[in-house]
Image (cartoon, rainbow over all chains, first blue to last red):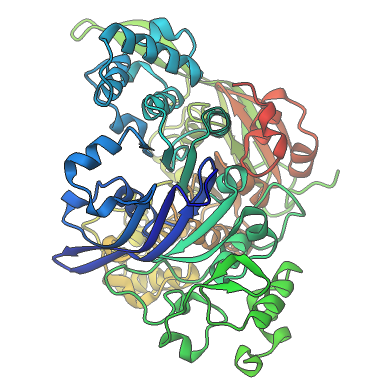
Length: 355
Length: 285
């Protein structure tokens, strides 16, 4: 395995000019994905997670987006490729599974025909051969009786089966990288569990890298080795999965972890919601984008832009937060012990005093 | 087992607020345009029995199509039952019509899943929240009505000055607060919340869950919470009913259900929650 990452995103900016102003959807995004590994990107709606994956696929160009930065796939900058070159790559080396399987499948074509089309777009194989491959793939993703179901129309598939068919289509050319954008959000939990297990199995068998984009911390906890947390177009924290859950550093990550009810541990009496709501990407808050919702924000955090820096002693763990590392550690210790943000602040003292 | 029900809150202590007996709802499947003939039935709810104690929170969990929303709509009398009996506050309401039904409806209200489509975009927040008053002929005096609505807005954490704003000016979480305010306007005894947070952003969900719990304590409400999210139900509910294909397969106290699920379907559901257990891989593909 070479040391060079399969996909390297460097300082990616994506902006959409609109009547109401410029939407800063992605604002200086950088991450690496290594061959055969899984990166989880977590964020709420409007955090820029979907726009960044669409941009990697070259799908935001025609939306009138202004794009800057670099997206290096096996060393080639995808942003400099022509539409023709991009089309050769898309669906071949890089494939994407979209959130809504019903609107991503053509309702008037048989499922099998759509898989055949995806294959023949990139490889010159006879139709009969491609058809056999479609059946093989539907079997691989766990559709029962694939020889017969290959001739079904999308409406004859259940929600979970459609998502499996989308995955089969994405896998038909054995991509090196699979981008799965909310692959299970529309599905019931038992079906979701099956789809996630399927993705994990296929990843092992085909040695492909996966970027899984979701709002669900449970899904990334299950799937990803590495997690990036996005907020208002920026990555605020990235860490190995276990570390993100055991020693998170960013107040937004703390907020997410404290506001979600879980199946384990004691039933906490009150959830601790993050105050306010996600910001507009047209009129973004100044300085740290999270400061209006951050219980620990200091006045100067409204002016200074935080930079992503490694956590002391943990080079793989990076965070973009203006609080001192020692203050953050003490705050999290309080929160973890079950104190509210206000109580944690009193116990730790004013972060200003610590600086 | 200590009873979680808040006894003595109602007029007849000890008696459940809602009693559902062998409730059935079949939707006919028909064929033909002019001469419709029945060719079968979808058994959305197929013989469901349970009680909701006064002051408790009952959770109904299950996957798409298990009948949980149909059950709620039957209790609300938004749908007519095919068979079975629904008693509310001691009264049989299964076949109630006209004025008596309207009177019962005042006592039960619903909060819907989608805060974007459940609020009329052409009405101001003030008129949305005061609509229940208009329907039931309460607070006819307009200044009094306005004052009551402002109080409600304040109660659910909305700025009363936003009385004249329209739904599109509010975020998802705020809209769900509007839905809660509207549901509380008539001071109901029963509140049914159907997937109240599943359309909301993760960081907002806790705000709405805390609001529901807060309102329940404050007004002694009986709450039925319908959700596909087992973690949300565990957090909120005293007792939990698990539905599968139109039937309740397990009904138990919260701690019991999550620590010792007895029905295989409940076990499968719990094992399927991502991140909850690492033995998820035992789920058959």
